[in-house]
Image 1 (cartoon, rainbow, N blue to C red):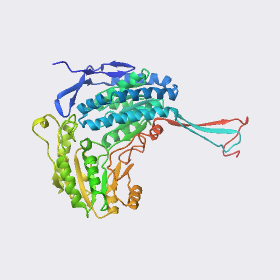
Image 2: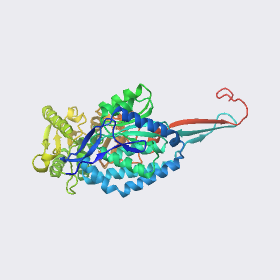
Image 3: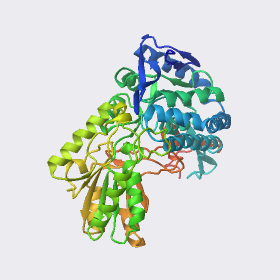
Image 4: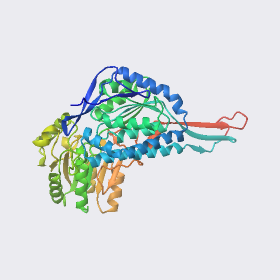
Amino acid sequence: MAPPKVYKNFINGEWVVSASGRTFENLNPANRNELIGLFQKSSSQDVDQAIAAAQQAYISWKNTPPPKRGEILYRAARLLAERKEGFAELMTREMGKVLEETRGDVQEAIDMTFYMAGEGRRLFGQTTTSELPNKFCMTVRSPIGVCALITPWNFPMAIPSWKIMPALICGNTLVIKPATDTPLSTYNLVQVLEEAGVPRGVVNLVTGAGGEVGNQLMTHGDVRVVSFTGSTEVGRKVSEACAARFKHCCLEMGGKNVIMVLEDANLDLAVDGAVWGGFGTTGQRCTASSRVVVHKHVYREFVDRFVARARALKVGNGLDPTVQMGPLINEAQRKTVEAYVEVGKNEGAKLLCGGERLRDGEYDRGWFYAPTIFGDCDPKMRIAQEEIFGPVVSVIPCDGLDQAIEIGNGVVYGLSSSLYTRNINNAFKAMREMETGIFYVNAPTIGAETHLPFGGTKQTGNGHREAATAALDFYSEWKSVYVDYSDKLQRAQIDT
């Protein structure tokens, strides 16, 4: 057999091995006998070198005209588009989700790169009046410095692009650490940026464990900005580490998202949404529709249809075009799902389908789990309160819109919510009352687009947003500029 391919870190414009001399394996979650490659098990020394390279490159990059930065991103977007299919296949091999979804993941990176490239000519500030005569006032955006970007495994190219592209267009340099389960997709993205002409040291990639690599990135004195996507538990630690040095910190964390189905809903459409929202990406999305609250008048009909559809889903290797749901990312995640299924049973929820590992044949080589639905759930049950991050959906009956909203808001998270109804009044009421950063009408809780802000409330995040122009506010700082051409001292609030 040919030796496995060894992938290197990218530091100061060079592909280099880790100072530790160690590597880790990247396995296919649909077939753990397939080794995708070996990646660097980086040390704090590697992180220090990457940060030093980014710090040195910052001086020239921040002074590069933003339209010129944008030209590099345009080239990168075109390269991503040309290589979309190959990158999608590699992503399915390392992450497991079906090829149709990995194509969408790469497309999101393409969209974000094109979008932020255009912002190179639209980093708008404001001009405004002064309260004093012969005085001109304006605001401009300024870059901040070295950014540390820590990304998850479920969207291994899309989410890195959400962070990398706005950071670059604003004039920052960066070090990115991808999840150890899916480093290849971020590697491919960084390689494209290198080919597109990003200068040495502007973008740096270090792979390895969160303990050694992530902690060093968070606490290093030369890092000014930290952007993290992952669990609320780890996000809290990131926030605490950043607070000590007053670093800019963007946290995108958990969700326990709800679809609300009213009695006047199009049930065919609502079931479609619940299946896609609950089992797309094997439920491994922060926006996954893990709760469905259904009006009691249509509850039984909805549940019967929903269960039938879930049972019919074809689970398997995502490279098979007939497969509709892939494996979980690893054995630890499958054990987490199994533990929550037992919790649901013990709490008295009714197991309607699934609730077991898939076995025999190809299933024995991967981390597969059956699409699982619990019915007649109490909204206070743990399975209806805590993020499971797997193909498990809790269905909860309700008496009407007000109770649905109360249930929907009755969790610690506030990322995404959805309402199925034909009543425009109810749609607008729910839009106002739901305490989530994203809200859908007659669509599931997944499906964000790059030109709208992405993020949530409560324990989902810390108030910042990713994507769209909202991301520019995180990766830049406002500077207010006053130009006094009166040729005399003028004292604001005194000489008015």
